Length: 371
Image 1: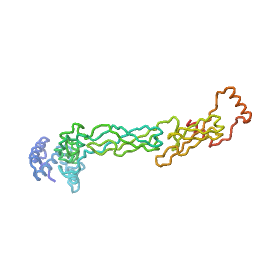
Image 2: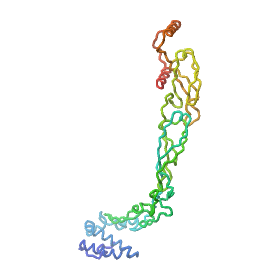
Image 3: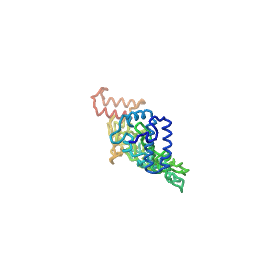
Image 4: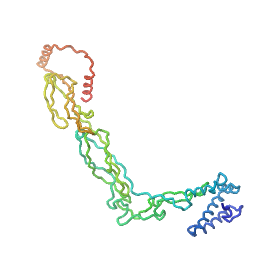
């Protein structure tokens, strides 16, 4: 390894100012911009490295004591110091590091829209046209980010690589680092005439209509994914996804239990005793319902296939109707007399606690829950 004092042409007792003056003189002569030859380039490296060592008091002291350039003393095997190690693995200063510039086109963000449905929409599914405030491709530049008739130009600083190299002085010598170019932000090109409509973004904010077929069987909290229906990316990049979050409004009459619908039917005491046939309005139209004689409060009448179509499947659930027998609270004298006569004839037993039946309790529980 060449002697640093000899490289700079100074004596070993040279002052810091003398070392700096000698370095500046040689640097002006050997700088690649002034002297592009290969021999001059190699000498410039030696001069710069010698100055880095001798201008630092601690490194110069170690060097004068025979410790070499390494802060750990001595060389590093056959590499001639840590600075040479970095050059061996990463290339000499000014060498190409490779790498690719960033792309201006990026994927757009996902979007979330909340949709409120009625219970009837859940039974059969529905179609909605949804207005979405989102990013769309700029119609003026069609995502190029440039004024019409112009185009991006190669960056003068990084020459299209998107990266610049800097030489950093450290205890280990000169280390070359690669960083994104500050001028082009790593894209490798600049836009001298950005589109005035989108300010060089390639996209603008706008409202657009998304047609959505909501399947039957959805429930509150469910999210439907529409791939590619979200925001367009910068510079006309691919769209993100659109997510539809569903909220189902409560219904005044019906409630949901899985794929079944639940409702409560109020039956007068005479109809409960004698039985009757009535027509009720389900979510998909009128349907006849038979109330058998002697029906009890809490009994559940089932209408097959009048429930909800499942999200994955075609077999609809049932409509389950809980019976609520309405006992009259206001009777005239004649009505009261008839009831008293009926009670005498039937000789009904006095009220008492009956044996517990889980099935009956479940029916009552469902009726009270949905009543």
